[in-house]
Length: 463
Ligand code: ADP
Ligand code: ASP
Ligand code: MG
Image (cartoon, rainbow, N blue to C red; front, side, top):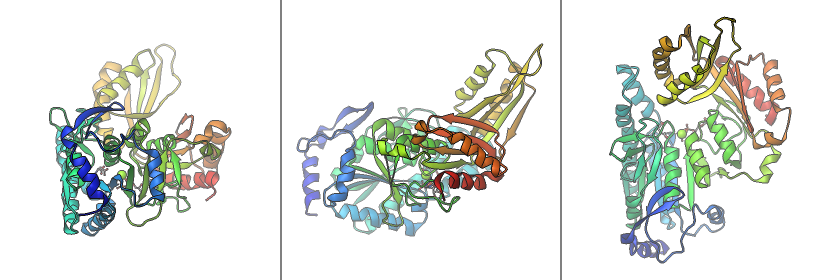
């Protein structure tokens, strides 16, 4: 192939043998020493903008395609065509793919048909196969278009994690093979959602973890552009499947995206946004099915504060656990939540009621956690029952967590009152409340969740 791409590849090819490990904001990545190109400092935020005006500029792009975008052979061919367009313009492309839609859920279902609490190490072994199918299929689709492409597992791409199976954290990335393949002129397809420990155990990064793979790789290879392709045009003011009047946001601050993701807006995985904020990775969420501009996720700007509520989210994936009649004495809450933390169960909201009885007072402690962790949480609590001496364990899976989010809340009052009034008018009872500087969340009856979400969206966002 002739053209600018070849020149760049040739220049880089001459220096890959001097690959070295360099610290990258705490992440260690092996980068080729770029003797002929100026050093890049972090993710070139300005370049993301620059590219819009200079479409012929060569770029190193990380693109992530989610489950629906690779859901069948036609969709995979569509991804290959989109990637090929960039490649033919001279860009170097790293593609991160998820498992085909439904595959991960099916694998989990299969394991749970054998036992409700399968070994987490074996779950990782099982779930990692989903993405491994898609990388190969995507590489085949690109090769079919005449584009040289190689697939790499997370481990081959140099993604090293801790050993917390099913929820592993990325420790470091050494993308030596990614650079080598790019330098050889290949599109590199990396399996999302997976890595391996320093001891060589396969791990996965939590549900939705391909987003994290893409953002972490973008940071490690110092990509010019990071694009998250999904089945919606971008980040909306609410899930457009539940709120038809939801509007697409041209941009959103990391902190708002973090709160929305934490509140259940599954368009981006929470941990991937944490990572992006920490390492300053500016990224765009856009559709793999059209060319509409998406949503840019970046550091907060002053103009963002004018809007009080940026978005509304409903988390239907949480369960509430109540320890009834827990002895009200020092150390009990510490014991309960330490045991949950030791079992790597993430707790979201916590409410403790006032005590009853004067001689040996008791109280109720409720907390919420993700539904998939419920069986594990029950086991942990059952094991503590004798030691702590609570009366019973009550569990509800029919709750929804409704949240409103916006950096503008910092400088506006009366926001909570307006939300609670709106819910009262809808006849929705509030079970638990939690707030942060830029978020208000309430736990309500799941059956009323969608209607409550639409009412709150209308009250704050007008549609
Ligand atoms: P992928 O498989 O591409 O990772 P996901 O299913 O994980 O896609 O995320 C995309 C989905 O997120 C959308 O189909 C949409 O229903 C949902 N979603 C929830 N909240 C929002 C929001 N605020 N904006 C856009 N999409 C949202
Ligand atoms: N396949 C994984 C999941 O369904 C990871 C991802 O899609 O991002 O959660
Ligand atoms: Mg996702």
